[in-house]
Length: 105
Length: 288
Image (tube, rainbow over the protein chains, first blue to last red):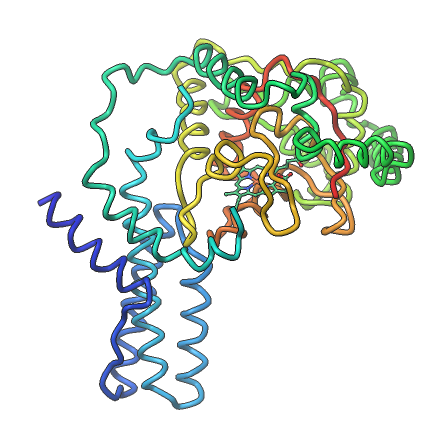
């Protein structure tokens, strides 16, 4: 289970690294779903006290594109924001033990 | 380490973190919280890393790391840019509130020469109390609105209180209370925890890279890093408090800063101050 989680987190982290593939044309509904998912993930990161400024910026960009009617772009940004938020969740979770590696002893 | 290249590597760092996780060592068996041993190891680390820096000079942040800068700093101290704030703080400190009381009524020894004892652990409340927090509480207890934690009045008041304590060795106590130990340990965890898209911890910059340049700035060593607070910074064109510095450091690594005086910041200040015990208070400070 733990291993699996790590593997999927790695995939997510790679997504956040800009490997998100271009998505098929998006509708408004698709955007709304993607945006809601991104917001939910970012909220979870907030509970872990580990939000990234880039997530917030990418969410804002998504919203702006949607307001301009560009749902392809809006959906892509929302998905990127979700990937960023998930990477921040992964970071916070793994740091729960990893921080000790850096400690001066 | 250059920030720009760090930014390019940012996302990769997270992916790397994911990769190295599988190789993370098992936790050491001795996970007992031992602040005395921590402080000893912490101070030794910096003394060994910078054998030429005098112990009491670590409190001068970036200036302790570079001889040219150190000379600039000595020149600057002739006409220190924090002077105005210091004067303002002195005036504010003695001016009575509407109810006739003053800040002096809220603090031991009338607030003079006590900076080195902050933050302290309040056993009634079970939490760390920083000087900034104590000042705003003092105001509120006397019917005055709290100040912004990051600059202006708060910086002026803490500048004055630090000034009256200059040269006194940092003297942070950890009472024999499991909650105090937990606060200390949480502060330590916060200090070493990587965060933000750049995947940096406070330690990445202030333990692994002091003396190195990041953009135009030279990184301060973590030892004695809060002793000079508050500071005047040219980049801020003004004064900033400990709260301002912590939140700025978080934004730099693309982490959303927490609220000033949130528990994490109070605890990390407690930790950093404790491991700097013995180093003189040097605030207020001036920075490039």
